[in-house]
Length: 374
Image (tube, rainbow, N blue to C red; front, side, top):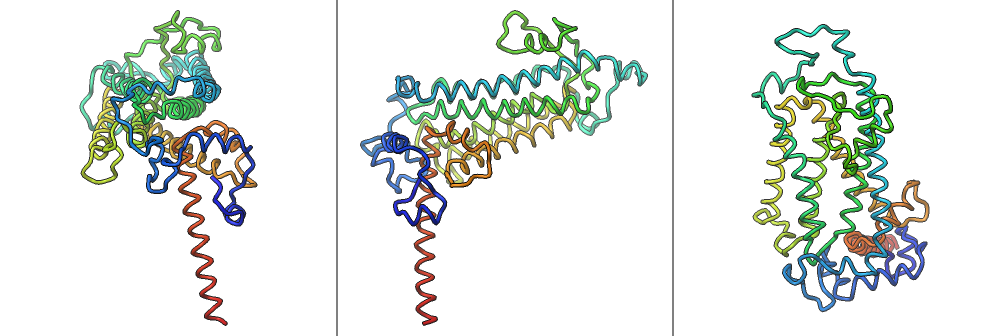
């Protein structure tokens, strides 16, 4: 957001490269009460009358489904969904190729030692140190429960302080990027499957592209598709970690109640943070202890997810600064994708205020220095 003075715009790198209609759109979405610096980072939670709306006044945030909001967000949701679908499909192609070309490879080259194991399994510190969990159902429950909570909390019942479409776009893009990255890691150095009970279910063994399509979750004709050669990094870990990070960040950013936004140590935010970390660690344990994945699969999956999550939020902030010469070739796309995001608009206003204050302080310091020197 451009600062009030022209000199401030030039000094701090803010420009007006976007049209005046966009600026008017921003002013319309953030009213005078919301623009007040006293409202802080969560200014978009304040209504036009300066009051914070009650959760029970609009738990489903019907305003998100009005025509202006839909016209603004649906193209962006479609673009984000396309990124997610592309990343997932490329990942599935890699899985299908691995199943077609790597099944039985290690068994043929490394003789198994029954009854200790019926397939080749690498030594793993968690396998050797922690009790074995016979079922993979707890791992599936944790990996599937986190996305379900995100969808219920932020997309179905977001409350009047909704960031429904903004979070949905970010969620899809980040997950799509992680699927795309996984497509290369699982195929670059395929590890032997640590789960000897895994039995592949393939409908198109001679066509990896059709098999990748059949393995998509939106294809109902093939609900039981399963590959057993994709190990590093863990998709379960990505699902659990990404959705936990979304929950911990946006529970505070798009809260049901004002108390959820508190940054104090003794607050509901702290409770959610502690519970989130505990659930995350429990999920990691069940993924590895059930021998569903090696420890390294979980470790790399978690690190990749944290990097993508933080890098994404860094990039969109850099893109929204609207500098004259951006070194990020993807900035125009992210600027378009994030243009209606209320949280970024408030952040940009705050950033402009801080930069303007720094500029003002610099002028005072230079004036004092010149006075002393003279």
